[in-house]
Length: 274
Image 1 (cartoon, helix red, strand yellow):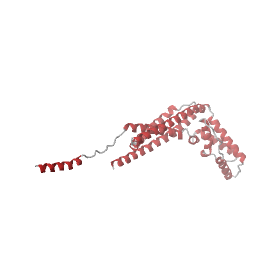
Image 2 (cartoon, helix red, strand yellow):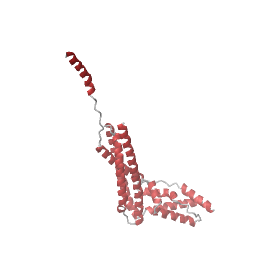
Image 3 (cartoon, helix red, strand yellow):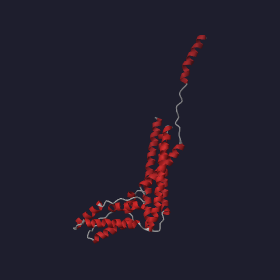
Image 4 (tube, rainbow, N blue to C red):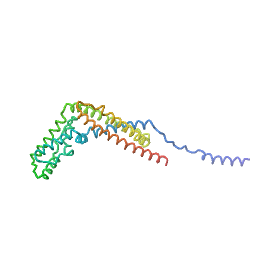
């Protein structure tokens, strides 16, 4: 019996360590962090999207050049050139865009620079040569001055000045919002890295933030005609066109963030299961 008891104790001593299995570490979800990240993604998408579109003079000038305001300036310049013997409408949207960009810059209360008239001069000279007439430097300089004058007249109306004051305030608020969002993103990134939950929160933040950006963009698109009202129908139509174009960029960015977030979620899930 003593030999059996000693053998039993030996077997029990050998089996006891094998029974103490290490507990597998479970993945801890942090939905609050993901929701906060989605809110920051929404703010970044909206503020950065507006900064690169509606509050960017070059982008806005491209929209204005395709509007009734730009068409009036283009038609007036082409009519003046026709009177001087240069037919074929050499002034196009791309040619007039730098002049419109200068007008938009003044509308935002920013310092302007001298417009490079090389593209306008080349377009007039090429069209004049094809028509069998010569375009002197005096003629092209006169047309360039006329372009600046027409753009200044188009942006110096009372309705435009009222809209300019609103746009300048909105542009300043958007800048403050963008700076605050970037600072909060840096703090959130540091916190997520400290708790080793960066990839775990990145996918849900991007996906949910993209959905929110799409929703906000669509609501803004539908409600913009009610919010943008001025004393003249042409200015209202112009601001609505600029706003719709900018919100379209926000919606597109939200869709890209949604797809990227789903891909990050899938990759993180696959990596965690492996």
